[in-house]
Length: 125
Image (cartoon, rainbow, N blue to C red; front, side):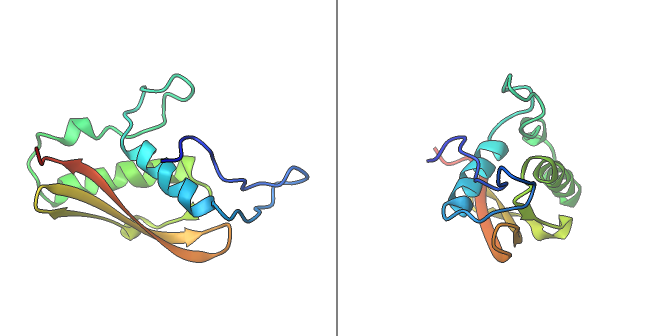
């Protein structure tokens, strides 16, 4: 796992995006870190992460999934300028004992479509 290496999105002369060969891998790693972190967990940025634990023991229904999608969407908009997503591009699905988040968007580094599938919760022992 790659930890905390953000892709080189900006060149030093201006604010234009530049391409990185490892950008998608780094973005995936940072998305995993973001989704598995709680807000206020990191002292460098207390807003990094989502409040996923508060949803664990609620009734599993469409309202709960919409709340989780809203949390993820808000965080991705703030912390991941290298990808562009819409709220409807985030899908929460349950596969047996796993809760999986599927994110589809556009990589702003090379304007290709990206698909990320991340496990939010796994109750297997």
